[in-house]
Picture (cartoon, rainbow, N blue to C red):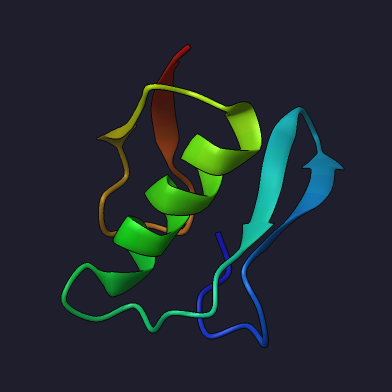
Amino acid sequence: MKPNSPKSEVVGEEDGCLVVRVAAPPEGGKANRELLKLLKKYFKAKKVEIVKGHTSRMKVVRVET
């Protein structure tokens, strides 16, 4: 995840990982909330949650469709 980007978007894949940019800053959980919102829409999922890496740029997320 790359916070403070011009817009929130899924950019592609790199080394088996999804590359995502979010417009929100990495403070107070804003970037994480934006990431979850974006991934929920991208995967058309009922629920998306961060499993590991809450304070890291590399995250493990669980997606429930």
